[in-house]
Image (cartoon, rainbow, N blue to C red; front, side, top):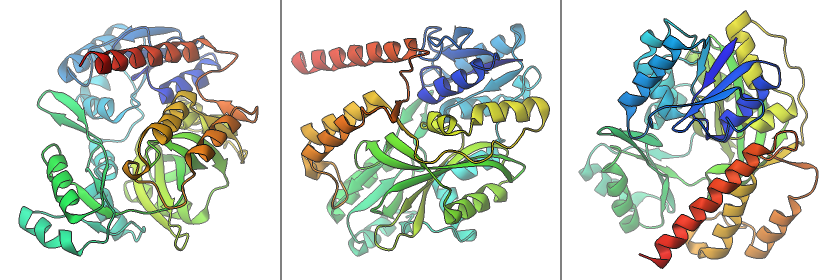
Length: 404
């Protein structure tokens, strides 16, 4: 069968393309250019172009409909929140031509809208950070002086449709009532009523699953070692770990309550004060560190493909703990942040490594036991492609600095 992936310039799509392509499955990677990170892979049959889903949502939808009508694709798999939302809007039209292995709008929104997720977690007794969700400016003024700082200002969505284009809305931090009020109002101007949460200090852990009608069929655990930005974000170095029974139980509660079908990764932090887990968010799609799960023995893209095509699959069995993968260029950005930005601007946990330790850790990750996520000796072109894009972006930023 033939599979069409969206978001060809993302690393998770590259991991999925390699997974299926190595097994002889015909894979196409779409993005705003037919030449993209995933289509550079030797395991990708072709790349296709479509209008940017960020700046031309309707054009993206029309092009996707045209592709599935006139080309022999059996399965369409979107891999970002933006493309999933746009595809769900035209789902009935697309399903006349292709299979869509993703949940419907309601369960997807219940897990990706952080306000709805918080309410769901409270109902299911899944532990969360102390959270305030104010509904008016007056309530904000009453709450702000009573909070323990620093706090996290968390938008309900990381991507938000404003007019006819999507915008990124980042998590922010505040150390004082004045700073919280200013930053809260700025984020509220983009996405209404962000959450205010206590800042949990401790390591990040993830539980990745494939489920069908609320039943978890395969699961995988990992811990974050370094992130970009350093205060918390995208993992750049991570390691497979045995499944924590507590995290597995909480993840199962959330997904079962939504009768979930498809893949998801549930993120937690283990509070350093008492090692208790706190729910951070749910990635209701393929996640950034997907390659780690595949390398460790849980090939989620192929398992999903089997479930869609055959309705079942053989259990992947135990996976290997202690496997590490590294997104090299993300790790470079982590190191640059540590060395170029003042420490008080990074909102780091107490005891976070010093600049020198960060450099030593970066150099230590070149050892053979840490696998490169993007650059692979059997498939080198995506790594070279990403490196070229990175240097072009660096040159663009340097020109902006030198010629403001």
